[in-house]
Length: 313
Image (tube, rainbow, N blue to C red; front, top):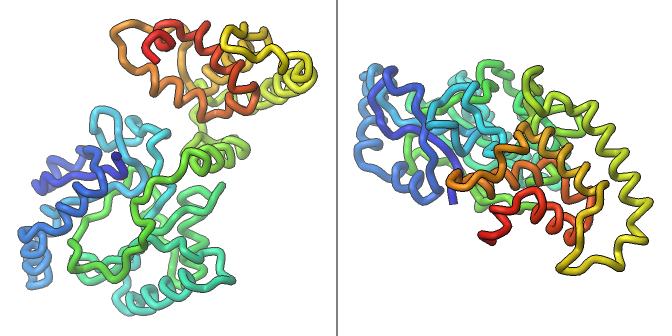
């Protein structure tokens, strides 16, 4: 399963815009390479130019559209709910490590079990990967964690497409058993909804004005109205939930609204030969359509709205 994106083509600035998707096993293979260990050694020996050749990972997203590491090609649904705090002051490195390990084990801390990985950088600074608390943006999580471990917050670390040079398994101080562990579908949906409830995109970024999901404020009101209609009709509908069930007008309205909020076009979701049906449906589910109708109604709606996809499942 794809867990993170990065670039192993250590060729300097000309490849900075590239980021491919990796599994955790692929990343571990890269972190164990002898040539990577040698590069780090040479950098610490004074060959500063080598740093620009190091491979890197992008902590915030598991994929970019067309493998192009740029904000315009971010795929919100691949958000990792993780960020990386970069402590660049040598005088604070050990303090940051000690404090991060302490809060990670503190049952009274909001950051218990939220530290995912700690590694030394090529210049012997430190990178601390943390799980973003539910509902927090990248910036909010970075600010809160830096305050918790009493180190300065660095606002250069919060760009969504940011990358981090990696240094290998030998440089790891700590690795959580939850490092790159896939979140459950339920957890992902809860985290996405926490953002949506704040009027943000499913990755915590502000919605763009030209994005279909920018109609969220208006759309959420409509969704509440649809939810109310569903509750009014639920008692009468529930006895009719069978495999031949027909979708109600309320359910169809809810699905169409969620398609719009997901930034999709209804007439482009179910085209033969364009094998993105599942991804499209996952996008619609991510904005909460399943909470607006029963499973049986959702199946009936999908059968009507996505007939081609339904024939393949």
